Structure formats: C-alpha cells, structure tokens
Image (cartoon, rainbow, N blue to C red; front, side):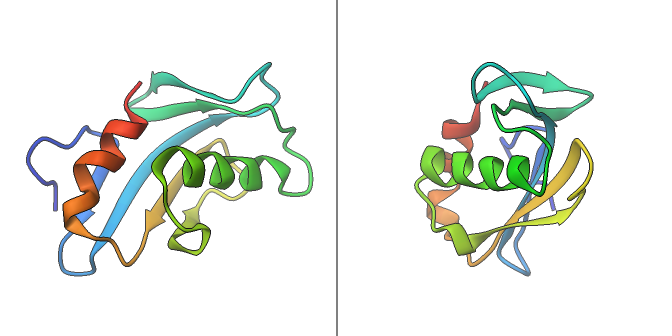
Length: 106
C-alpha cells in the first residue's frame, strides 16, 4: 500500500508494518552518499567495492546511521548481487515514517 506523501521508491505495508525501499546502488564511488533517483529508485553511491558483500554491508551501515535505526531492522529482500535492491525496514513505527523518509530524500 502506498501511503500518502511517500516518494515513488518507498512503499509502506500497513498490514505487515514494513517499509519497503527500492534502491539503486553504485559501488566503488569516491564517497558514500545519496545521489538522487535512477529509474524510479533511490540512488545511493557507495565507497565500498562489490566484493564479498562489502557493498551490501556498507549500504546497510549507511542507512542505519542516516535514519537512526537498529541494524537488525533493515534487511535486503532482493538484489543481494545486483545494483537494484529491495530493502525492508521491519517492526516499523508508523510515527517515525516522516523522519526516515526525510533522512533519505536526495
């Protein structure tokens, strides 16, 4: 279900209390940052190389710090070996939705 006011790359599933994020990752960048949009997904540039899961770990660490969430709350549901990923933030408090989305806006 798409909550009112959410960007196209974020979907909140009220029934499961899960926020889903459509992410496009660019590993091997000069710095880790949110770049903008790429094909309707939130584009995040990562300093980490795509070797042995380093880029996935860097992505999760970046989101945890940026959004102020617990590491175990964020999982990569699809795209572990792809630049296009679907992430889920579980056990989500609806009241935090605006602050998490604001932290991720390009």
